[in-house]
Image (tube, rainbow, N blue to C red; front, side, top):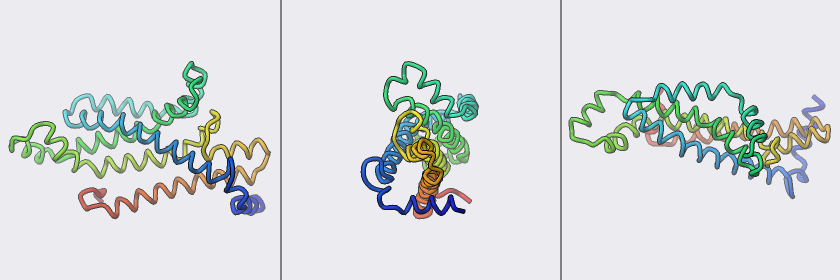
Length: 223
């Protein structure tokens, strides 16, 4: 209980929120890193999943590769990248490791959503003379959107939690508060840093849930 009380005092100390290396700065760094990695992951995974889901070929292989990729610890990937020539390029090892970590849920959910579209609806659209592009963008994508957004939400929350690894590679973010706590042998600071990461992840999850509830009915997750 003393540790929790001291962690709370550390968190509520205004001196820890401002200035260079303060919580506010680390929070912005964490948000920026998460946003960049989520954006890159979406650019890589979603087009591939949409096309594979539309044509119905190669998707099973991509999904299985994604499952295999999820089994590889992100920390191990980060260490290997740091030991490779890429390690000399600043934050790129962290960005690459986090993108690889976020791609599987995006790919799997988007592909599953596309293949889950009612085939009768697709056949009806084809019977109306719609082209493949029109069916993908006008029929399949809207119907698959709830599951695609669920994948984005999962990836975002996982990225917030995992981005603390950036501190191990000398990057910024809330992980720096935890590593600084270890260096200072300050358990309250370590606990406070972990609590900040957990609160940030819950806040992101809450924002996505709220966004889905406020979205039009066709964009909400079924069930």
